[in-house]
Length: 217
Ligand SMILES: [Cu+2]
Ligand SMILES: [Zn+2]
Image (cartoon, rainbow, N blue to C red; front, side, top):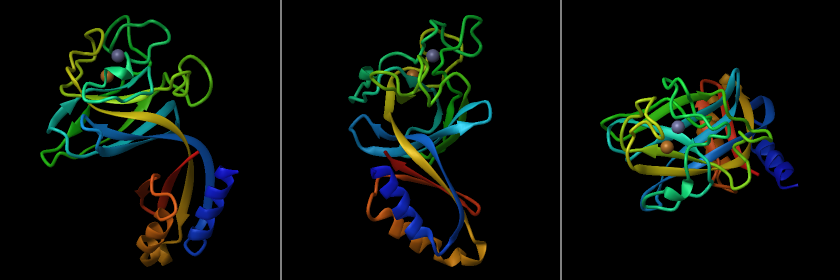
């Protein structure tokens, strides 16, 4: 019912500018730093060849950072050991360059600019939004963890990527894909503010005339 209400609300808000929409199951994670402050968001959805994680963070040290899906959906700072080890239901070793790897939760590194902002779009072919041992929603949940250093993609158990500096619990959401009438472009920012009002915790990603709203379940 809640989902239906969310979809209905989004539909009403967007009626004036939207000419196509579809709703699919997805996930998101609010990324927090060691002090528990929100510094970014990851949106997670089905893609060709697996699950795509689009992540945007700020206020992180510039440079290359390891990032993984960990096996427990708990982010207790400052060390985030609560998130457990990498998601690894098939007992592999760490890293895509490890002959005995990778873990299901292994991802490519994320680059953080001098401004402290980092963006990445990461594909993982070994995780699922559905049921099963490699599910992001297995018992106890999962989390996205960012590390202080680069992942070397081969050293067990975490690619020599050092301390955990940011973490986000992966939660179910529904993605509403909205295609916008380009002739109504001027109304976009207003509509986004209105859409943000009743539930301010969903993510908005913008790609040309398409918007993806991730609404918490
Ligand atoms: Cu990790
Ligand atoms: Zn790993």
